[in-house]
Image (cartoon, rainbow, N blue to C red; front, side, top):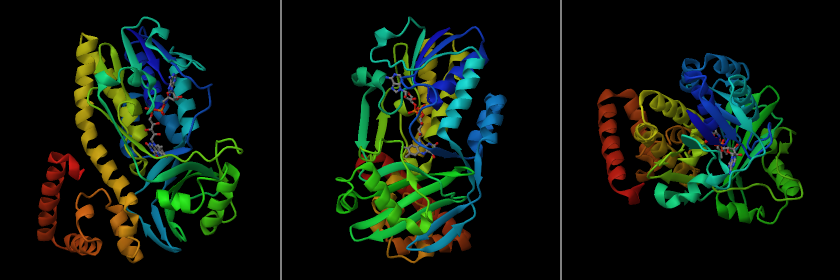
Length: 402
Ligand SMILES: Cc1cc2nc3c(=O)[nH]c(=O)nc-3n(C[C@H](O)[C@H](O)[C@H](O)COP(=O)(O)OP(=O)(O)OC[C@H]3O[C@@H](n4cnc5c(N)ncnc54)[C@H](O)[C@@H]3O)c2cc1C
C-alpha cells in the first residue's frame, strides 16, 4: 500500500512505524513542515496504559521511550503555600523532542521516508497514494480544506495558558495556586528529565489582563511569572521557545471535534481529529492509540474505505469518555474561584475528582462530605454511583449541560 502522511508528530510517526511493521513493502512517506529535531512544547505525561500498548505494538521503541522517561511518584497540590500530597497516582513524563526523535529514528530504520521542511498546503502537493493520513495536529490544513465534509466543531476555552519549561526539578507532579491582586494564577509542573521540568501556567482572562500580560514582551512576562512563583521556582528561571522580543505564546485551548474523520481516501488521526484538554494529559496517548487502531483496521479489511470507517467508529466510541472527562476537567479550572475558599484537603479532594459530573452541580462542601461518606460506606457508594450515572446520562442527552 502507498501512503502519504502529513505531520511527524506522535500520531503520524507511530502510524508510519506500525504500517512498516505490519508489512515491510508498504510505501510510506511522511511530510513534516518543521526541520528535524524541532517541535513545540516541553515534556508530556503518560501512564502504564500507554506503555503497555507501546510494548505490545513495538517493543523496541517502547524500551527506548521508557529509558528516556522520568517517573513521578505522586502529586502535590500547593495552595497559598500549604502543601498536600496525593500518593495514589504516579506516572511518567518524557521530553516531547526526545519522544519524536525516538519515533523518527525508528521509522527511518524501518524504511519510512520522512521529508522534513515540507509543508503541505494542498492535497495536490502529495504524490498519488492509496491512503492520505492527516496527522497534522489541531490546526490541520488538510482538515480545513475539507471542513464541510468533516463537520468540524471548535470551541475555545476561557482560560489563558502558556506552555513553558524550567530548570527547577519538580520530581512530583505539582500544582501551585497563587492569589494575586488580579485573581488566581497557577501552574502544572512535572520533571521530564533529571534537570528540566514542564511548567504550564494558567489563569482566567481577567487575571491575565489585570497582571498586564497582554502588554508585556516575552522577557518581562517570564520575569513577572518568576516573581509570582518565586517560592516554587527557588531561583530557577522559566524558559520559552519563543523569541525574547516577541510576546509569550499565551493560548486559549481549542476543543476540537469532527463528526466524520474520513472522506474518500483521506483520514484524520490524533489532534487533527480531536483534542482533549491538557489538564487530563492524554492527547499523546490518544493520538498513538488512533494510529494503532487505524493500522489494525487496515490489516483487517480488504478495502481502504471500509477500514477507515471501522477505525472511525471504533475510535469515536473510545474517545467519548476521555473527551467528557477533559471537558469537566477544563471546566473545573475555569471555575476555580468556586473552590479557593476551601481548606487545602477539601480543595485537593475536589481537584483530584474534577472529572466527576456531579461537581459542577453541587455545592463544593456538600460534594466533599458526600465523597468522604462514600469512601467509608458501601451504601453511600452505590447511591453516589447511581446519581453520577444519571447526571452523566442527562448531560450526554442535553448538549447545553456539557
Ligand atoms: C499545554 C499542553 C500540554 C500537553 N501535555 C500533554 C501531556 O502531558 N500528555 C499528553 O499525552 N498530551 C499532552 N498534550 C497533548 C499533545 O501534545 C497532543 O495531543 C499530541 O501532540 C497530538 O499529537 P499529533 O501527532 O496528533 O499532533 P502534533 O503533535 O501537533 O503533530 C502534528 C505535526 O504536524 C506538523 N504539521 C502541521 N501542519 C503541517 C502541514 N501543513 N504540513 C506538514 N506538517 C505539518 C506539525 O509541525 C507537527 O509536527 C498537551 C498539549 C498541550 C497544549
